[in-house]
Image 1 (cartoon, rainbow, N blue to C red):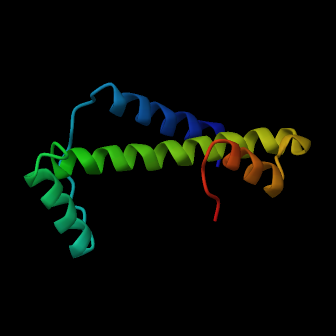
Image 2: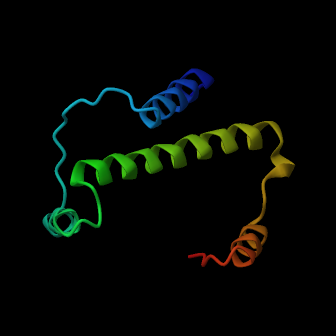
Length: 99
């Protein structure tokens, strides 16, 4: 996967976050997950299932883009890759649990 794909994905994410026009798509979700999001929307916790799905997909795309960027950096600078111990220490310092 090249820089062109990464650039296209980053551009799609940026456009989506700027309020690009929407397009209906069909998504199949596990029933309990769909029900849970419908309950959240019905109780006003989230604006809508569509809005929550959009944010979740944006977050997932951002994680992929960041991962791809890091992979490119580590390919050029393999010594820059943190060890699992380093990652665990950073996570602990940030108050996050690691698997």
